[in-house]
Image (cartoon, rainbow, N blue to C red; front, side):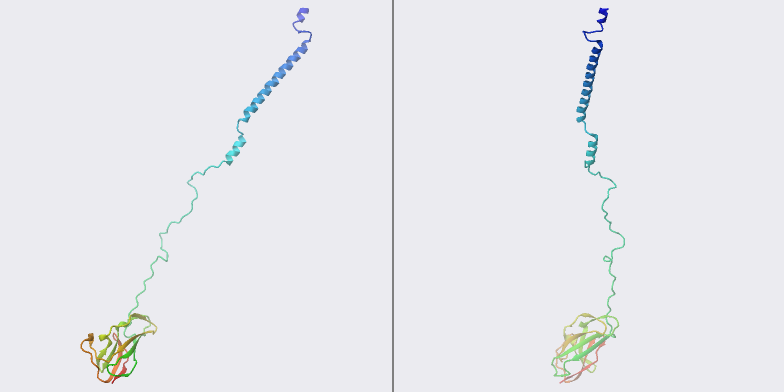
Amino acid sequence: MQGFKGRFVKGSEPESVYWKRRGIVAGVVLVLVVLAIVGLSALGGGGEPDASGEADAAQQEWTAPQPSGSAQRPYIPEPSSEAPSPSASPSPSVPPVEACTAEDLMLQVVAAFDEVRSGAEVPVSVLVASGADTPCTVDLREVAVELAAGSDVVYSTAHCETPKGEEVELSDGAGQTVEFTVDGLASEEGCRGARRELPAGDYELRAVLGDAASSPAKLRLT
């Protein structure tokens, strides 16, 4: 019986103490294994990126805008091909002013003297005006001063003098004045022949413009 009991008892300690010690050793080993696994997990977790940190970084990272067919662009109006602007439209044509008719013209002749020596120069002024209701034009270069004895014209500024003046527009009774110098010498058309002193006597001085003529003024040559 003593030999049989020795299989279950080691040394002088009871069997229960032996199993307790083995249980404690097994528990310590188990704790060490758990701690080792937890430590390895902690070490491995430090090298992996944090998911929330990556999300924040992705939100803060700037990305260049991609071209899109619906992108907004500034509006530039196309030139209109419709009606032209008022500044580009042609101005309405203005009808030309008509020439004054002989019936509309009013002529007046005034000599500086009414009596001079034959051959002496006499300053003469001619006023040209229009009685038309609308404006009309007249060429003052066509005005002439004549000296007549009865029905014969013995002198005219149109014979030898260069015409003076220009084309003007007359309206509302306004007039233009043309100045002449009558020298009292006989003249012919085209200033032909020798000019001679006119005989003493009474002559009529008048202004003419085409078919229009002024009332005669008296001029006595001595």
